[in-house]
Length: 265
Image 1 (spheres, one colour):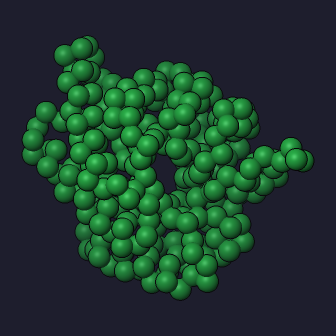
Image 2: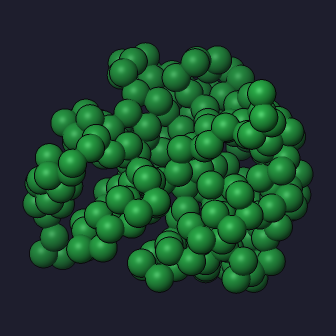
Image 3: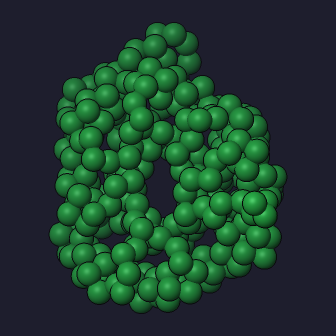
């Protein structure tokens, strides 16, 4: 053996509006695509059906099968809510995303937990955890063909997601670790999350910021120690997918070159 580390699958975040340059980046770097159109409500005048059609046509036209992931709806959604109508809305939106993903041949779907760190105490946490576990247990059991990934957002540390994953204990459910979110909203530095998440990791989102808000800057344009974090992933033995999560061709190209120059891609 020559000591070369395995090459990680890499995804770039994109919307249907980006398709004019996505094909070139995919071909040049051999990356996959994480569809983000459905993560937030469709803007007035938009159509999820039309967006789906554009992605379907793009994938059909690709010369090779492109790896794809999808970010499910998350904005203002709380799967572990005490309100049954909110849970029903989450289910409706998530089922729609899963249907679209299945039609596109996408297997990796990213969700959020809806955890609210501003509400403190056992009167909130344990009931939230129980309801969230019940919600994702049902979703995972009813859709065995997908890899479900729950991404950190407002969580101050890894514990809430660890508790959800461990209680459900499904091989089809893992954590998507977003380094930018951990840097802005986490109390623990992002480089400390990796060891705690351990084998629960299934996907990693990379981007940069200055620590004040989720700016999704190109890699190296902020304060996040990406080389250290990827070194920790190597030590952990995690060579699963990483996602370059930022908008715009220039930012994506810059980040891919950042990884390539350091032998990380």
